[in-house]
Length: 304
Image (tube, rainbow, N blue to C red; front, side, top):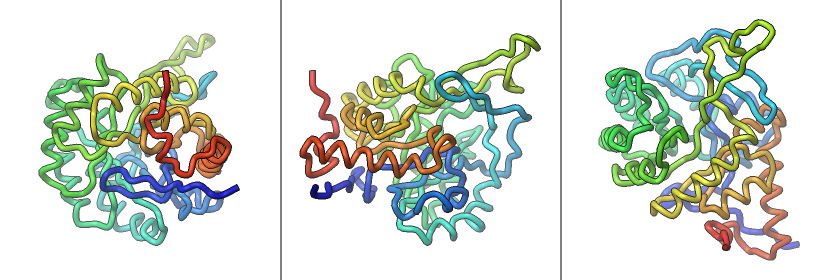
């Protein structure tokens, strides 16, 4: 069979294939080098960064669920400056797009990080707006359209890097959230982040996670994620990176048909360290079987 064209253009961010790995599930890349040729991945969304180093939440902070996992890691990371000095030189040697995921408790923290990263070799910034806004009583930035607009607009002023806004699914209407990010200057959306969930140990009668509530990811969230990508893709004109429960090639194809221009592999990396490559091959096999010459031919191709 002839090989298909797997290149995608996210209107300013060109990738050799539509496969990225989700922030927090692939470390800084080196953790998976023994299993995956990092040159074969379209883009790496690095572990979530904060302005200063963070130790994260107390353990236990990860729990398996019947169809996925809960996590409350708490953004353990060395801080943005340590990332630039210690991790970015390593990542820069590979032919892949490096996407820095940033997290802040105030708009000023987001802006400062975006400014610092603007003078580096990263290819894009992923703005995680699921963080609590300490100036608004701890309400997450991503749950109100006006807050999404403001944080995106301000970060856009501090950086000319390609800007991806990562949307939370814990909202009333994903369409209005997506539109707010686009109107504020986002180049792309990534969606969805984790759904809020909880697990209880009935023997101890205590939460399984030390902090009680965590983010649910894995196969259980896929139908929700596909629906949200579908709705957002019909609302905005900017590209979308779809994620949420992608375990195999067929899952990724669903997101592409729903309107995503690329996909991100998350929880699957913990189960199968070669999941990103297996999913890429699964997409290629589907395209060949269906007679498509390019992955771009199926983006938004859902039929009714």
